[in-house]
Every structure is written in structure tokens, then in C-alpha cells.
Length: 190
Image (cartoon, rainbow, N blue to C red; front, side):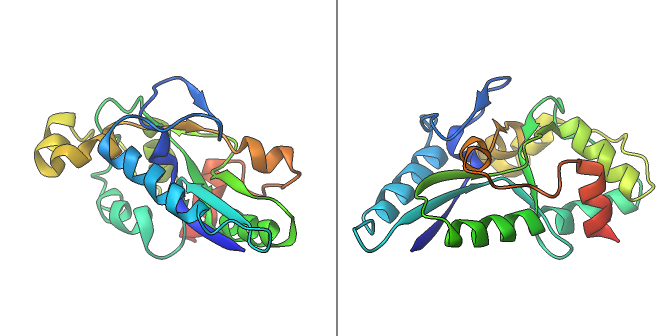
């Protein structure tokens, strides 16, 4: 079995549109890169090798990742939504991510899987939940113009988002443990 890591960003920023594994990639460089990565990984598929493509959202973990970058500002009371805050954020708790991978190892499945919680949230909701988990306000919005200035073309990865759902995982019977963002954040930040 080959497990290949990709990203929920594969779909691009489709606003309110709910995306599942059937959705094609968005027509921009980073999304095409994800699609090409997956295409190359699929070349390993054979009678003896199955390929699972993990389109992962933001992983909530006690160490590293997005929380390591965001929590310092939030702990100082300087955190808040990014840009409009209306963009969706597909997230997953590290335990669900690991259990999802183990589950795929034990089940004869192949193809793309959105490794995301069944409940994506808007960036604004995420910021407020993170502030709540840290017992801090989340009122300082980061202007989109500042993000564009700092990140250039990559700013679309932060100012856009995906309302991605794990349709194939759920249809195949995988059970998520962490459905509630506030509970997931409280768990990883304790």
C-alpha cells in the first residue's frame, strides 16, 4: 500500500460550495501541483499495490503545525480572524488523522480521501474557538492586504478555504472521534 499526502487545498477556494472527493482540482498553480502529485502517486497502483491519496486539512496537534504558529499571538491577546474570516477551514484532530490512516491500512480501499472533520468551520469561528480554548479574546483581525503583502501569491492559501467533507471515509464506515472544534482544541492545547 502507498499512502500519498496531498492537501484539501487541492480543490481551491470555492466559497460556499461543499466539496467531496469527486470535485476536480482548481485551475491554479498550487492546486495543479497537488493534482500532479496525486497523478504520479497513482502510477504505483497495481494488482499488488493500492494507493490512498490523503487530502488533508489543517491538522490540530499539540506540537507543530498551524497551532504552533498561531497560539503565540493568541496567548498575547492579539489573535483573530484572517481577512474577512468568511473562508472555510477544513480541520482534523491528529487522533482522527492517525486513526484514519490506520483504518485505511486495514480496509481494502484506494483513491482520494478527504482527511478532514465532517464539520468544517469558517476562519472566524476557528479564531474565536482558539481564543476561547486559550481563555483569550480573538478580536484582532489580520487585514487581507497585509497577508497579500507578506505572502504574495501564496496568500490564496490563507485567504481562501475549502468546505471539504470526508464523504468517502464516512461512507466506508470510518468513525470520527472529534466532531466539535472547541473540544478538539481544548484536547490538543491542554
